[in-house]
Image (cartoon, rainbow, N blue to C red):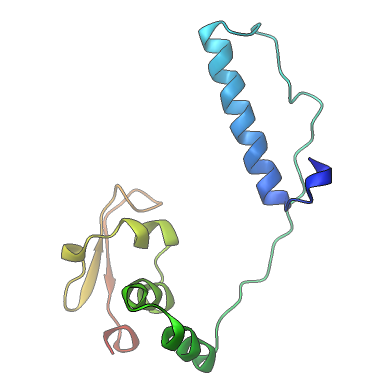
Length: 123
């Protein structure tokens, strides 16, 4: 995989997928129970990256250039503090006038929560 010049996170994602595949194969008896093709492959070291916060000017540029149907997604991402996966699973009926209902089945903690719609998002 080194010749592919992949990021460490991508390498680890592939490693997890391969591990899952062979775990399934072991359960089904397709490979020996002690077969582990990843035994000698270390995890790739992932470096913590600094979180980037867009300036108001940068966000204005992003919103001005975005396709119309992306505006709700981008503004919720910018001003509500929801995770990408949560925003992607939201339904319009969960977006109320003064809050967003994040159901437990789509939230990372697994608990329903109400996210207030603050003035920036409302605008």
